[in-house]
Image (tube, rainbow, N blue to C red):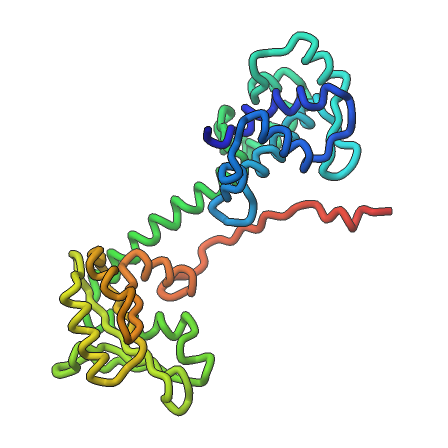
Length: 300
């Protein structure tokens, strides 16, 4: 089954706490994983950030919401225990414990009001089934995808010569050439034999990366890659990068897997992603930091 939403976890978590013991969150995760018959792959599925598993994140937020509703207490960090209110709920259990169910308690209403409103404007749907981290990451991914499309549209509207300079700038931004004191230059012109740029990875020019930049709308096939490889052989080159605003055919991708020289293929979307990651052609609009309690500071 899919990883359960955090609201689906709340009632099983409260049932788990019915024995009145103090539960460690890590132990609760194991029991809840068994309850939902989750495979190891499902338990290890990561959030888009890659820093935390989706299931662990949802279990943690189920605890937070139950605690804010007064059904659980937290006697120590990353632990929980059922409260009298929690036991009263289990005496006549609902079909599910949801945000709507918890909203009957004034403490939870205060918590939601503080979380949801800013300048009297509601910024989150009351019935959202995603955790705050998932909502934030989903918004980030949407913004990033839009930026990737905008970058591609802008690059395609520029001249082929500008694109050649962009490709060289991108490789330098990514660290090729500069780490060893090397340089980069555009060489694309009539008679360039398919080479548009060269990155020298060291001061003496002993290691070179040869570039080809194709500002295409369609798909780059194997024949174009073979021409580039031929140009690399003509220069006795060992490394090449072929960057296009379009896509590569499956045949082109398969061809470069087992050839010498080594050739990296970068399509339009990958190029735009790299431009974002390495700060080329983009500027910082907003920056948000997500922080958590430093438990060590509060130790007495």
